[in-house]
Amino acid sequence: VYPEGAPIHSSYPGGAAIIAAVTATLLKAFYDESLVIPNPVQPDPSDPTRLVPYQGPPLTVGGELNKFALNYGSGRTAAGIHWRSDAAAAYAQGEALVISLLREQKQTFREPFEGFAFTGFDGRRIVI
Image (cartoon, rainbow, N blue to C red; front, side):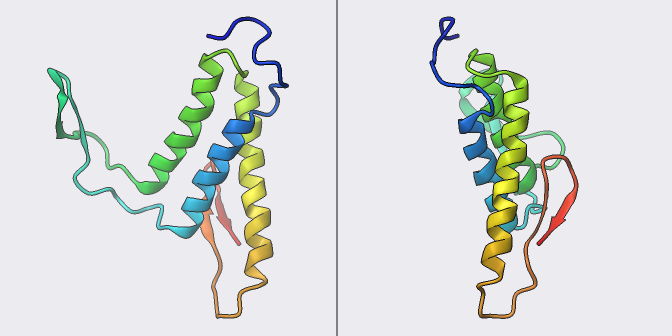
């Protein structure tokens, strides 16, 4: 945890969480986010230097990208740099930036293109 008053920049919205949201959203727009990750592994609880097969619900590309962005913002909240509301605003702002960028870029494509489609952080389907 950082000392009170550090860092000395505004907290709202979380800039690093915006970058994480932009990165995750762009990747979800360009790749099949429903793709199930084959043969995932996890650290062995009895020996963390070994990997063992993951036992749990299927892991998808979209789900893992969402976890990446959300964990990034949550970590900065836990460190005392930001509030939860800073991260929530950052996810919305990062996603909105990507939507705007993709709408603009779609108009410049010379080849036939059906558009982009992905699931937003709030679970709604976004089609551009």
